[in-house]
Image: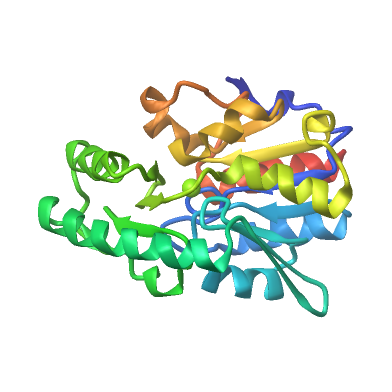
Length: 257
Ligand SMILES: [Mg+2]
């Protein structure tokens, strides 16, 4: 990983970023992050947060934040607001209903078998996934317990991704990256493979790994150092600072170009 100061900013137009522990710090969106988002927006960058957070939150983000759109629930959908809300989903309503039944059953199994785990407090806002809290509102669980949650999801054929606070599990072949492809095609008629060098991605944890692998300009904020041993595909660049301050460093570099 190179220091982010080596990033060539000249061709960048699209800024994809994770939210939790990338632009937030200790569970809040600090003023430097919000200012960094506004600075990027005002300079004409297309800013798109990509998050494991739920549909209910993304409704507000798309409507209120200075962003072009938001990809939520680890790539299950994107929402875009320009006077009217546009919602693009990866599954039909019938698939969503069927998958929810399977997730309800998994929820019972995980809470029974992994003591100390809990359903995330934002679960009621979710459409596609089940989020198990391992350190947001519960006493932090051990790596073994987090791994056990992942196994319980995978044993039933679900996909499971570990963020810095939750294990998110869902049924279906989508992730943050596949929705990113769909978003670029639908909104800009661009093939993100060809236009890769016009994009950056900023993240902080293992659920960002497909993005770290794909993007030539993949950046992690410094707190990625807590997860490096779990990553097969490391980001290309790393910031000098953790979370919000790290994101703000990236924004300043881009806005200076
Ligand atoms: Mg994160």
